Image 1 (cartoon, rainbow over the protein chains, first blue to last red):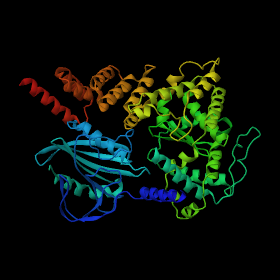
Image 2 (image 1 turned 90 degrees about the horizontal axis):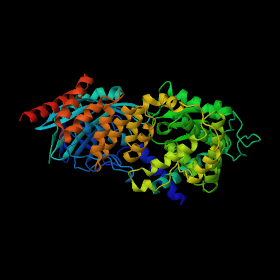
Image 3 (image 1 turned 90 degrees about the vertical axis):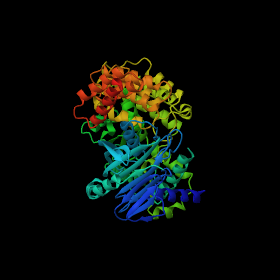
Image 4 (image 1 turned 135 degrees about the vertical axis):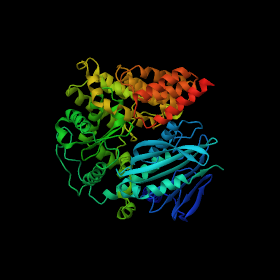
Length: 195
Length: 399
């Protein structure tokens, strides 16, 4: 019994300290896709896998490590699907619903960020974007990690068919966000969605 | 639930390891009436000293947490209420208000008290808040945490986990997990804390009926949940696995309050004035729990005194809009419409009203609502969106 408790304690501690699954893979400059969500990166990134408790189509890319920059490339969510898996029926996470207004799409992502343990999430600068022949929205994010670190971000959401394709970038406000913002905006501009 | 139990088991083992190296001393320094001595600090070589060290560490971390409410007025206000009921222990207590949407207050053995926004939002008066704080002070004054810890530790085999403590795992475990173990108070402890809190609050001049009213409201909120499993589960006065708020606890408080007089009128109004500016953010936080049945029950309780109806009707509309059950669209529309009639309605009411009216085909009313939004929110970042909606609406009516 006590050995089981020890194993659980060690596993818990590991979960607290690790944010992404194992299986790191280099993403060289060029095209990259998570299902039907395709982007082009201008330099080598690392595919960190997916976050613990994230849905299957959620891929996490980083340059300097997930604590310093996180680019989520999320395959098209079908209606009823979520970015973060719920812990139980009584603790549901935000689910995508086809036909949400742009404001509701922003709300969907902001609520998802709260599930991802970001606090004081604020969105702003909502603006229209064209992704290929699709219309979408892009907006800015500010939030804090649980330990009070300020983070900034950009998100791009495009509805195609009844699916929602998401690109989400987050980095510490100090230095890291501004250092990579232009590059990430270029990646978002390169996006193409659809099966 | 199994997951929670496992977490508690793991955390208790690790915490045991961190404290087991210290000697078990007699109970905390007590006065003749069984309460702790004011201003006492246990020796670090005792088990109580170990528990204090853990609490000191958690308190240090709390000061940098994102959820810490840094409003310059709120924490001093809550501390003032805590001091009224803590009386002689006022100097031993340090209050931290955390913006977390769950009903909870807790007090660590070292006097570190957390008060969560979910509690402040659910208290209808300062008397209700004072009762909960008095309840925590009573656990503190009577050493319930230490007693629970010693009982728990006596059942654990801590020998093996000493190795873990050396591995530094303790530092990375969540404080809430630790506290869920040591704050699992028994029925007797909870009943005693209720009674002692009642005495402290009444002595401080608060409403004797407030304690039972708050516990009753929490049970009603549980029953209003969207989730069948939650509706049939126990109601607790904290997030920890303490003895639930049972009808016998409420009956005992009703019995204590019988025949006592209430304080002067206006107490609710004064309390609302203290929390008014936080209502939008705290309600938005509560909505993120996605138990809209409970949020709607909470909003109805907050609206019962007829104050802040523009804000409260707006969030009622938001809860119905997000929930999307049969009939919720009409209820959302009704709530937004009601909100728009109050001076304190957030400007977003007119955008939501426009969206909702447009969905149900009331184009003329939708146009008016969106135009009102644009007039009221001249610098709105989503102005282009609303203008696009209006354009689409106008094109539709021309064709």
